[in-house]
Image (cartoon, rainbow, N blue to C red; front, side, top):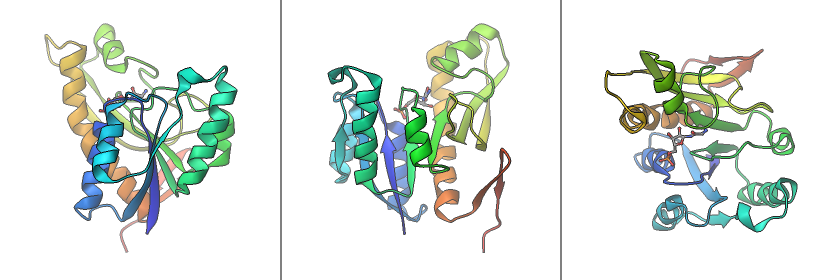
Length: 203
Ligand code: GAR
């Protein structure tokens, strides 16, 4: 059974979606920890309720990003996970961490990458005027919101949408796509060839 761990900064609804699918037996994995940079993150309550070990690495308590990431790396190492999931983790992961876990970190982003990377992706989509946005689950590389794409889902932008209504509609798809990507990873069915993710058939 694979071991998975999460990094989350806030509400943690994507974290919850994955652990719920594990409980339902859809994802063959056990969860070895939730790491947060924000001690007030609601994700912490969710982890405690589920009996998952919590590692708080409070970003605001560190003098520099390097010092923070040294302790973040230590917490990730303690989790001893096969896969780390950035589930609403709102910081850029440093190159040292990416290199420590090559091909073993995935992220969910609330837009169809490579459109609208970075913060406020839903607001960016509305401001640009696209008619379709969505979500992307991808492997993390050294560049922000850039690595090989595992799954995407399209979501219509509807006349009158604001950031919040669009975010809500995209979130429904996030809660479907993230557990699915984690399931495929845990079943050993994802392979990165160049920058394409190939999916092996179920055996
Ligand atoms: C989600 O919409 C996720 O895609 C987004 O933050 C939200 C977290 O919600 N992530 C990013 O914007 C990363 N750049 P959650 O805490 O309820 O899962």
